[in-house]
Image 1 (tube, one colour):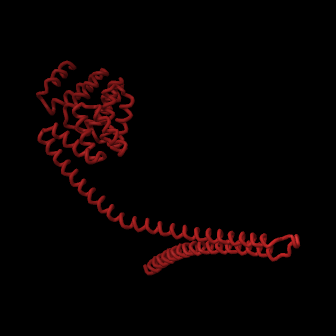
Image 2 (cartoon, helix red, strand yellow; image 1 turned 120 degrees about the horizontal axis):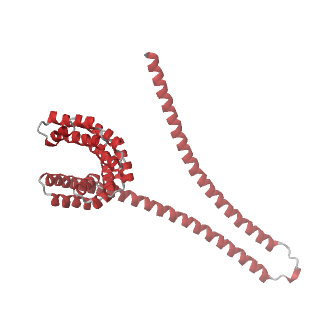
Length: 319
């Protein structure tokens, strides 16, 4: 144990040392960069000064140099050369001053921007936090009120309350699901479909929405798309009998009754006391003329509900 402890602290020490080296290297890099900028600026200034000096020396030589024209060179020419030198020096100095002034103004402007950001950001953050908390509380209250209206059977008011919440936050997932569920159960499939698509875009693993979209495609007789969506919903939630029943409907309507029987058997395993499912399975067996299994499930219904009229009649017919 002591060896493991020593090894552990050795690893920690190495990690800390590496972190320190990285931090020191970052600090050195930053300061080297700043020093480089200053050095480049100084070199530029020195080059400018050197250029000015060179111009002056050239002009000076041209003035002091014995003229090749001899006596024909006049004092006016000398004076013109001197004025030209002075003018060029003034231009060079002005350019240098303008460059320095521009640098100062840029630095000042950047500093003002940084100060402005520092002053406004905390205020904006506080306002954003306050608004989000206020909106969150308001939406929670609306969601609770909507649930109470639903339990009271006031469905028109329930719909209006959810829409009120979505007007505050159109991306609220909980309210969107509530409204989609309401439209789906009331048969407003067009309205439900647009909301269900939004839910799937945000949460592709929402099996309930996938199944409901599949049902809408089934109602619109697009059975292949319906089957794909219901299959995906079943993979995500294989123990939901509603999803399996949806698949039974699709298989039955596409003539695959044996496959429908298989899925109906899965439904009964999940809900072994529901005689309605027994009745559906018995009728499916009758469809393929498997009367022995059909009779077996009709008898299973009578074991749970001895007074079930349809099961009694079927048992007599199949004797």
